[in-house]
Every structure is written in C-alpha cells, then in structure tokens.
Length: 377
Image (cartoon, helix red, strand yellow):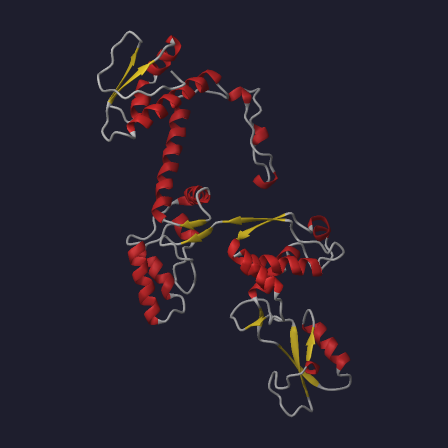
C-alpha cells in the first residue's frame, strides 16, 4: 500500500475533478450562451471563453457581464459535481470556516492528528496535505503531522464492505436491532438489479437468518475496541457483538448487586471529591478520570490479587486436563491460607474445580497430582 501511494505521488498528472453523480458539491462553473451563438446547447462550444468560475450565481453574473460587456447571454451551471475525494480533501479547511478568514481557522489550522484507514492514504490523506498547503493561507503548513490508521472493518467473511456487494452493516441496525424482513426492505429501497437483489437477499438470509438482535451502543463499541487490539483488519461477526452485549448486561447486574449491599441508608462520604469527575459540557473537554484515593480499600485489593494469582495458577493446570478435578493449595503462610479459605467458592468457580482444599506441608496430597508453584502461596 505504501509503495502504491508513493507511485501515485511520483507520477502526478492532470486530474478531472468533475463527476456525474446524484450527490456532491456542485461544480462552481457556469456556461455562458451568447445571443449570437449558433449552437445553444450547454457545452456546445468546448472553449474557456464560454465559461466563468464564481462562488455563486450572482458573482457568475457579474463576471460574465464584465467579460461579455454589452452582449446578451444566458447562464447555466455545470450539472456535474465535484469528485468526492476533491471535496473531502478540503475537510481540514472547510470545518474551520474556510474560505473566510475565521478565528477558528487562525486558531486551529493546522490541526495535529488525523484518524483514518490505510486504504485511502492517497485518495484522501495526500489530497488534504496538498490542498492544505496550497490553500491554508499564511501558514501554508501541512494540515496535520500525525495520522492514526484504524483497522479496516470487513464483513464476517473477510470481504470489504461495499455498496456493490450489498454487505454493508449499518451501525444503527446493530445498536437498535432489525428483523430479516427489515434488512430485505432496505435492499429493496435501493437501485439494485433484480438478479443482484436476489443474491443480496440470499446473503442476508445466510448471515442473519433471525435478523440482527438489539445490541446497544456499548456492546458495539466494546467489540470494535477488542478487535482493534488483535489485527489491522476487523471481520465483524455480529454474534461476537451479541456476546459483548451479554457481558455488558452481566457488568450492569454486578454493579446493581454491589450497590444493593450498601443498604438503603448508605450515604457517600461528604468530604470525597466525586463531582470533580462529572462531565459538565463534553467528555472531550474533561480531564481523564483519576483514582479517588478515599474510595480504595487496599486490604481488599491485596486479597483479590492473591485470589487472582491462585486462580490463574490453577487454571494453567486445568488447561492440561479436560474434566473438573479436585485441587489442593499449599500455603506456607497462615494469612495466605485464611484468604484462600475465605474465597473458596470463588476460586472453585473461576478455576473450574470440583473441590478445593488448603493443606499444610505435613499433609499428604493425593497421588498423581500435578504440581505448580505460585508466587501467591
């Protein structure tokens, strides 16, 4: 991809920026039909003398009047639109009010970081750099110095999502859920050829036989973040999002259970600085949350670190054996032994054991036991 991008940049040629699309920014050019022209169709004369460029029709009228002083004429705007990538290339400038010399443009251009996908490094990123340096006013600087490349989101089969394949997944349909009939209806509202429509429907029936269940925003975000840590390509499996939805429900229920243990008469300490973490205007403008020392219980944290270490040690042994088995924990410290005993049920559950027994050095364990030394014990 990098080599391809470099080849594009090394062999720059004239580029047609107009497209015949249904949507886009109108080309800011007007064709002038003079009264004495023999041919009256738009674009009949392929020369620059019959065109004017302006910001709007009023300016085009003024420019044509100056250019064709005393002549009668008609104006017709070019029906084409600007190429999508050309319009997108102006993004760092237009969001700050360009072409007007706004305070935002003075304060924030150039920006520092861009986040995008690697597949459009030339088509978008390079164009933004070129146009930013050319049109960025006095600074004439690159619009950004750092580019963060996120993974590419593909369908569950590893195919790039595209309008032609009709395999695009709408995030709102994952968040809110949609039936199979609803997915079919969305296809029917497009402009697919009947044969393509049939193929697309068959694909939906195979991938989403029961539609897409309501997963919620948090589960979708969590799934995308977890994918990001694994690869630069995301083969988005909806069932994985569903799994995280169930995990979020468990987290919610765990929090509710913990809160219920405080009792109805519980009142948070008045001298703790909780409001300083409250999001007042926007999370983008707030400081990253910090630990409230008054809320920590170092004794509980110490105990849970020990339990966590014991569970990991026992699970590493269990990975070598399929069935649930009895486990024995040798603690050379009486304090450690009491902590393990008090969390026996949690350790048995998390380590998938049939039973757990804390033993001393004088006890004789069952023959055939596998041994593993743990720092915790």
